[in-house]
Image 1: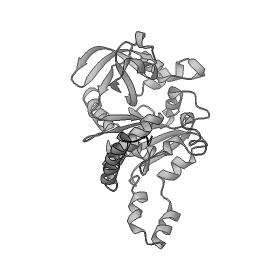
Image 2: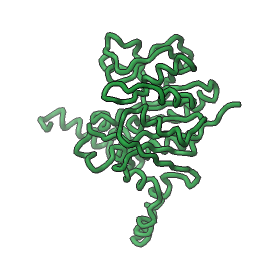
Image 3: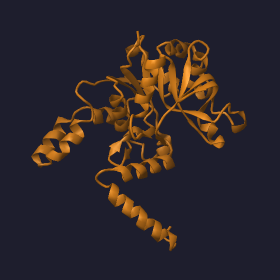
Image 4: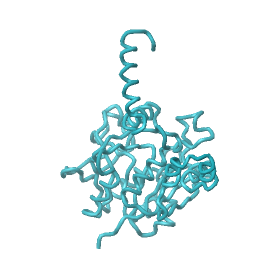
Length: 299
């Protein structure tokens, strides 16, 4: 029987040091791309893909994430009093009432593998997804996670979202080696964490979407800490490949690395261009700005 995917993990306990001082008091997942924070884009993707239980691995300084996702009756009443009824859907419809949210504290950030391990207590023996809000993926049709769910229902395999990367960027990714390419996915026979360009086994890097069968937890429990005393998810996947099928999925869509300042700016620009309220104004501004910078020393 095909197991249904219902639970998704959001590892959001990281400190966001690359965006200091903006993240000193504000979680990086609450940084806004136009008018929605990264965490909202992430949960919307998961809900649209059919997930019903959202599991957030967080820490004591990330209260703003929970505050954003749960209803704010005080804000609702204030908007009603001020006659701003048109804004109510923007805060009332973040999550459907049927969606369950679970918040689990990770005492200290010890790597992505360690964060995922904390979800075992609520996932038990079910398959599940992992979504990293840093990776914002724009899709014209079915979103990235929904595409992966479709493949899981066909294969029941562990699945990693992958994309082609520049050789020089291999030091930023887990890079896979493949035994076979089948249409939109690859059969993976190895994975290396952040290899140098000359040691990278391919040009396919893993990005922030995963689907795992529950057996990954037993590996995470036994695996030794690596660099900086962190439990690396890549190390667990390398062991998982020896006992279960692991596929690399080439998704349809454009990914923006919002854990990087330039990637965040690119995402903001592209989402602004598509925004129904300001898109046309942004296009006009970009056009005028391009003319201005081409003919002056304005920048």
